[in-house]
Image (cartoon, rainbow, N blue to C red; front, side, top):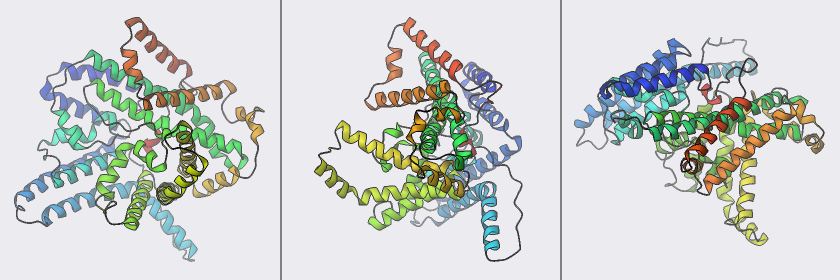
Length: 497
């Protein structure tokens, strides 16, 4: 069930209404039923996989808590470590089988063919479960947190099940921690008109990002990347820039809708995006982009590996391990691995050249804290990040190489003015609506960066003005959003991860 579907627009109000009408003590059971129904709308059988991961980590938590009572004088905590290891192995085996087994088979067949062996291993007929990487990481964080003593073990299996399967963030995050979300299912949430309005405003902004911006830009992006050998120079550049905003608005749109929907019911989900294209370095970008995943890798991989405590080389090694892992987390394709590796490499190069860049800027009279200095850093960062997005979007490594080759094969700025861009899938009107929408996204981000909270400003205005804003937002989405018989409700990009 997609957020941008009619089904969800019927499902969500019913779930919320009944949630506030029924007694507090059974509300989590209602959310559990609704969350599993929500997930089963894609494939009912894969709810068993969600249940299996949930039960493995819940039982592991109980076992760790029981083992901890017997390990008070054992600093090695071998039993608890063994239980954590078993939980990790079982969950990652599920993830590997469904997400990476065919990737391994494809590479094995390529290796066999390269060495002249005629044997060919058949691929498995598997459908990737929606959101498997998200809910397995969320469940695994609970096991690790119980082991570390960061959270108390949850003895109620049904309450733990709703923590893992909570429908707003189940299939594409934010990847919540048990220390933040699990306890909220014990809280008694009373209906609040103010909270509902705030949540619905966030949902409207998320729908604008998804339906007006991301789905519109995807038409041109698909045309350019699917037929990359036919385009060159500035056509490729426009496609790459549009994809940067497509994936931002698609994923941030989902997260915003999820956070808003949860807020309507009284739940507080973590911020997942913080104006990433205003970042002044690649490292800064990753402090702002997909924050729940970045912090997950920081807390459960980077720091356990030693973080930056064991010297520069170890720090750089840990950065590369994290970003190569992040690339593989996103998809079973070498393009994702290269995308992750480039992001890690750019951070290492940035750290190593920091002093040199500072000297160059000083020589040129560019101050980092000046408006022009920040703008220059933001442009360079965007270009570096956008270059890595080519590998993220390309279907194959060969396509990525083709896109890069075509990008630099000709200098044809005239296509920006001779109408060529209107032959890439979007009409002239839709193209310029997309440009204006991107400008609106950047304007809102810049206002937020300066501390201006647009939602709070709107809520402080008089009733008539507020409702005018609401209706303008709704009609903007209805008029300029991509939907209807010619456009099926587009799946969110991150559902495939």
